Every structure is written in C-alpha cells, then in structure tokens.
Image 1 (cartoon, rainbow, N blue to C red):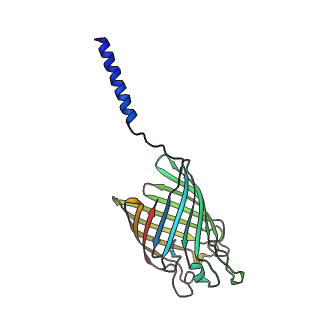
Image 2: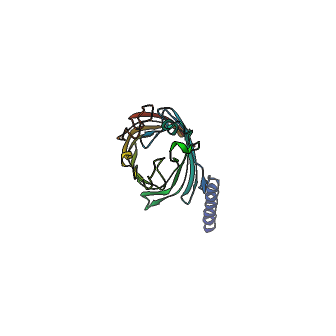
Image 3: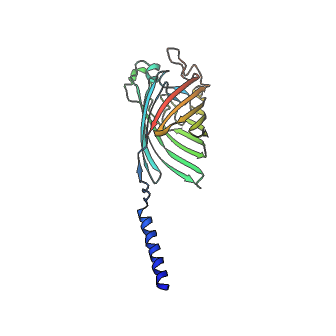
Length: 253
C-alpha cells in the first residue's frame, strides 16, 4: 500500500511538471524598445501658436528607450512660420532632438527630466537682422494618475527672440479616460519670455481623443491664447495665437 501511494505521488508530480513544461512561457521584457508615431493634422499648434499658418502638417517621430529609464528621440514636422514672419528666411522644417530619463517615485509619481533641442534647417541671411531660432531647453516633469506638470527652461534665445535666455514654459495637462478608448484632454500653459515681457502669454486647450485598435487615434481639440497681437501677427495679418480647432489622425507603433 505504501509503495502504491509513493508511485501515485511520483506520477502526479511528473504529470504536473510535464503540464507546466508544456505551458507557454512569458517573453522576457526587452532592454531596448523603439516606439514611434506618424500623424497628420489640419494645423500644427505649439504652445497655442500656429506653426503652419492654418495649413496642414505631417509629423513623425521615433524614440529609443532603455529598460533603465534612459531614452532619446527625434521628431519632425513641416512649418512655415519663420518664412511667414520674414520672407528672406527659407525654412520649412522643424527637427527636434531630445534625450532624458524617466522613472517612478514610490510607484505613484512619474519623474521625467531631459534636454530638448528645436532645430530649423534652412537659410537665414544675416542682413535680415533675425536671430537664429534654434532653441535648447531643459525640462522636468512630474505626473500623477492622469495629471502632469512640466517646466521647460531655455538655455538659448527663445525661437529667435533676442536676449531671451532663461525664458520658461509651465505646462499643466490632464488626459482622463472617461469611458474606454475615449480620453478628454485639457491643458493650460504659461510662456514667460525673459527680457521681452510683451511676448509672454497663456495658452489653453480642451479636446477629446478616440483610440482605436492597431495604435490608431483620432483627436479633436480647441486652442486659444491671450498672446499680444502686436507681437504674434504675421505680415499677412494672420494672428498666430488665434483661437482655433484642430483635427488630427495619428498612428503609433
């Protein structure tokens, strides 16, 4: 009887081990990932200001993420605000390069710090009196649940404004999924332009995003600012900080 019981236990153990061996094992989390995105919109709005003067924008980006939290990436979009302000300037592309570190604090608060470079390839004649718009910022962001607070500090002149080093932008945003696949997007930001107070302003955004299978999303948003028209109006009379609606279609991969 004891021998039969021992054999039964051994058989059960062998069957259990074989069953577990046949179960699929979870793939290990890769050290490196490469998320990216492509989108199209009827306007490119950055900090409340149109960058394409009401014309459509095609945008794409790619990032390299490490499991340690370090990352680097590049993002690009067509623009025309530089040429629209000064016709002698030939630049129709924005290329952004960035690198940083993301982590969690006590599993509840996200921390993100890094550097961001805005670069505009093109021809900038010296005789037009225009400062190069290339801009380098450092940033730190905290996030909790669906709310984030980010501060960006400029180490160069701010987008061509002379004598504006140490300008800053404060961004408070919320992205709340109120029903599955539907997200409400709210934002308020304050751009402080050091050395040129008339260029400082506040911008707002309220929108909604619908997420679809396969990484697709459709977003609709309303933007507005209290920017000074005397500072942010193109020679053709278009106010860069006007209230506007934007529809965008994006694909992440």
